[in-house]
Amino acid sequence: MNEEQAEEIHEIEEITSDKGAEMQKYVVGFPSKFGEKIAKKSLEGVAQLFKGYAPEAETIFRTLYSDIRKKENRLPKGQRFHKGASLYWWGMSLLLQEPSDKVSKGYEKLLLAFIEDLLDYPSYKKARKAPACKALRKNPAIGKPLLDLVQRQVENIRAKHQVPKNPEEVLRPLSDEAQEALDQPIEVTLNQVKPALGEWLKEKGPKEKRVFIGGNYRNIAILNYIDKVVGDINFVPIMAINFPETSKPTYEKLIHDISIEMLRKCSFAIFEVTFSDGHLMEIERAKDFTNLKTILVYQIKKRGERPTVTSMLMTNKFEKKGYRNFTELTVEINYFLCRD
Figure 1: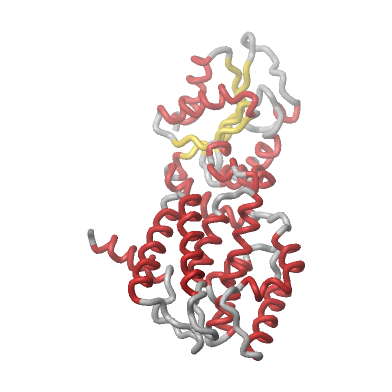
Figure 2: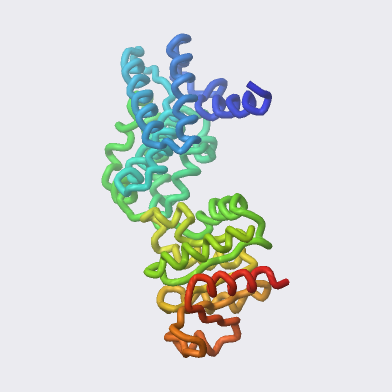
């Protein structure tokens, strides 16, 4: 194991445990061997999550939390384990699986993790700065009023010295308010997608080589052919449909915005406009990007034939080329990208 790998594992161990964290007096540490088992399983679960295996991570953290609760129930009255870390990672493993029922359950686990932090941390301020609360605030349906309501419930419980072992007991009286928030559809914004999109584009290749490929996806065979031609001459083809996030139902409403952001971060754009639905807005926005070189290509039956595209497309200032076969299309793409 090299130094970099050791450091990464150490960081994972830090965020999967509350080792050394200051807690309320009624919070007890895990027994030695049991604590070692928890640490090992937590590390395994986070590693699965980092590799993209969210369902496997969910199974690990669900089992881990169940084991902790069973052990905790044997503690004397008035004592409890802090379970915030296992609930947090259980919640994150659910959120990363996308289906709406999983997402709702994921935020429910994060809410329970927040309750654990409110119960056990020395100050409510520290709990509000912890990872669980930060993750909850990213869901617009879970606003400050709900978080304040949960905190007031915990304050009342702590004031009466009736701290339960199970955080669900704290949430139960608030179930109607909490469930209403958890059931709300989550509106994802472009700003939330931008970091992933930036990384994806960076991995694909430098901006000066990126070529945005747009068109009607009913014409996908032609678009894929253009993608291949662009790649064969050492440019970087960029198609919105290939960005992994666009396949997730949560991001469906953002596909247009994602396409525009991609277009903005390319140096060239090729639009196949034989079927002129679905990409007119992208072509209009391309006018705004002064450093973007754009060409419109379309199929024709014979030379000099007027294309069957809208007059709006034909009257703009972009370069326009018709083609009768793949050879002519290939020649036009090569000339467009390599002539300088």
